[in-house]
Image (tube, rainbow, N blue to C red):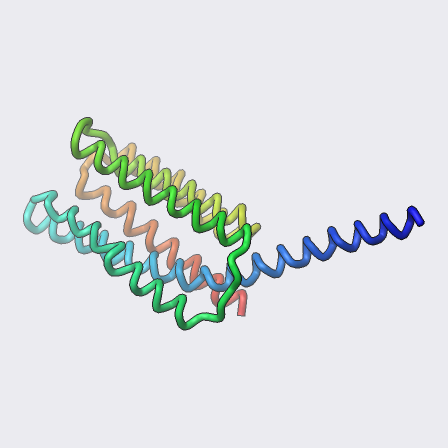
Length: 192
């Protein structure tokens, strides 16, 4: 009788692990499209800010960053609408909360920097971005996402600390967007 209960518990744990692994694979494959979308938008917006800032020598073009969610969220909703429905799970909830927290912190840092204390905002935001991407990779148990997050966060932070020109720091976000989009492409190709 005791052996039967242990076997049932073992089978239950195996079923839970298989379900979580299947859920991770589905979410990772789906997130490849979102990584491409947000990485592409980040690249385009950062290049636009960089170009216009250099052309006019005015940081006012940083207001274009607000176009990122205005354009991105409707496009993300279109992507979501055209995809197979994946039920909300612990993993998808953790990912949504992780990226929402990043957005709140990035916005707060931007506002605090603009209102009170001049700081190296690029360093703070790129570090948060890399951290968030790395945590997403850990949640999904996906090494390419983890590595891309580390590269973005650590190398981006070093670059931001070394080069103080605000205008040149836009390149950090261009590269981060490019890395995010490449990670998405890699996921889409490998997970087919």
